[in-house]
Length: 255
Image 1 (cartoon, rainbow, N blue to C red):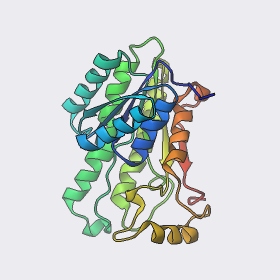
Image 2: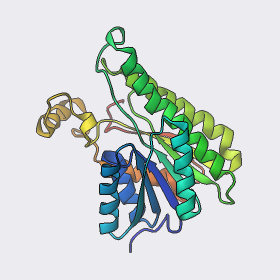
Image 3: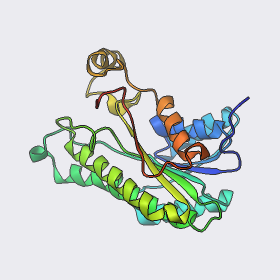
């Protein structure tokens, strides 16, 4: 019998046009949620919606840039207008820029990373909490951080790691401040997963697989479905007493 942990609930997923975000949309819909996928590229969002609907789920797309406060406010309004509540939110939108040491990284790349990965999470998180705390049953939020940052450092990824370390700190602080409002906030910190972001420039998936056999204790990247299942746990009533956690999903790379 299919799981239905999210029947009657609305789940908002930013960065829902590909990768982990798309896997999240499919996973939440499969467990009964009405899904809103958000991102900057409408065509990619429409592809996600089509996949959800083909699997028998319910989803809508809304184009928005999480780094723009008015876009975020419009996203929350559109979610409420369509489904009437916001019960779960996953702040997954993120970018990687640079690949250079700090001294050689451009200010534009630095700002691009911080604007989306940190300010975008801050804006979305705040808007989501302001809505959820008005609801009788509150809500659950999961921020997608990274094993790069608090847990690990890799040369050439320092700007990205700094943004994600801040997301972890933001998660913990917001969790403490708003659990009394009935809103649970947690984070997941994936390592390399089966997305384009884990590919080095010019690297094929086969070459990545060889590299991961050497670099990861697990010997492979995580699947997007594996990350999605962890997020669903944190967003569900199964994790009712989990507050401010940062769940690392990286095949043991940070051990």
